[in-house]
Amino acid sequence: MKGVLLVNLGSPDSTDSKDVKRYLGEFLMDERVIDAPYWLRTFIVKGIILNTRPKKSAAAYKKIWWEEGSPLIVLSERLQAKVQKQVEVPIALAMRYGKPSIRSGMQELYDKGVKDVLIIPLYPQYAMATTETILVLAEELRKSFFPDMTLTNVPAFYNHKDYIRVLANSIKQSLEGKDYEHLLFSYHGVPERHIRKSDITKSHCKIDGSCCKTPSPAHEFCYRHQCYETTRQVAEVLNFEEGTYSTSFQSRLGVDPWLQPYTDRTIDKFGLEGMKKLAIVTPAFVSDCLETLEEIAMEGEEIFHEAGGEEFHVVPCINDRDDWAEVLGRWINEWVAKESVMA
Ligand SMILES: C=CC1=C(C)c2cc3[nH]c(cc4nc(cc5[nH]c(cc1n2)c(C)c5CCC(=O)O)C(CCC(=O)O)=C4C)c(C)c3C=C
Ligand SMILES: [Fe+2]
Ligand SMILES: [Fe+2]
Image (cartoon, rainbow, N blue to C red; front, side, top):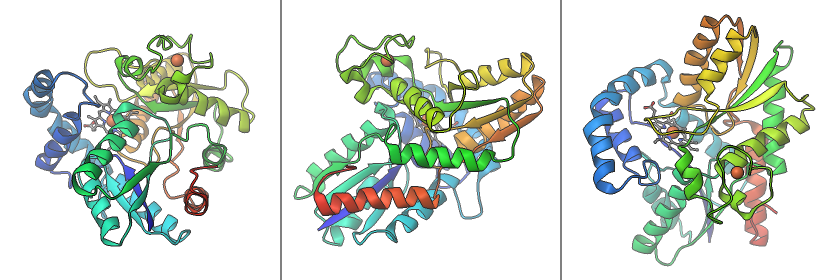
């Protein structure tokens, strides 16, 4: 029997500093998130980050938390429920960090008799800190606890026409009737080192962008290329003129160089240059979360206003949009009928 595991990033159980600390500990000790040797990662995470960050992060989570819980979890549950209505096979929801875990999602499917699982990482662009870590963990769990299961996955869908259409629809509807001079596509950042590590050719990725338009097998796993490609394809569908949109990277942590340009500095620069009306969309996130509701919609707006900007429009993530749930339902039904993923 077939079944589906939808996987998102995860959130703390509550906004209590202790829960945030436990969640951040699990998240940041992942060797594909902070990719330092174990001893150094332990020192950085347990010796430095977990002594200061949980309090600050807990305060930020408090600003965006909903009565039903973490926005990311609640929105993922709503999406799961909508997609379930489109398909006959069971769909379980799991988070890479925190609850419900990937192991519990696999167990839930197994208990229903599912042996053939389609994993859908809820990330449009591939990164070792997102898609890769989900697939690696799921395979480890399969080997240890569910050896008679087979796993297949939906690959990064950053350029899939169905996804591009949903994102374009969402931008169009959200900005309908709004006046804005520029649309900024802000993606979650990753350290530049991650891009080099994911380069299967070991020689293609140059970080400065000189490589991302040259076709290469490296692009199947290049987060930077995939982000720029999502922006380019959405801009094409919406007939945006060159210069009226751009791409940036948010949420950097630590002192190493991350993908640039940085979103906060870009917003500041736009304001200082005299831009008055800015719109922003965050396509690396399928569900609204701390990084979109607080870092962009609150901090980003403040930066823009302080730099002289006046109107700041934030496009919501695709969340549980009907057209998005329909697309996921179609991809699943195609897999169920034909064995192929996303024809
Ligand atoms: C070294 C650190 C991090 C890397 C690399 C990273 C990549 C990455 N993350 C997301 C998506 C999300 N990240 C979120 C929160 C978050 N991310 C990091 C660090 C790295 N992320 C931290 C420390 C946090 C916690 C928040 C904080 O303390 O400020 C979230 C939000 C979760 C929520 O509960 O709302 C998402 C989603 C992507 C897509 C990505 C690489 C492409
Ligand atoms: Fe993150
Ligand atoms: Fe590149």
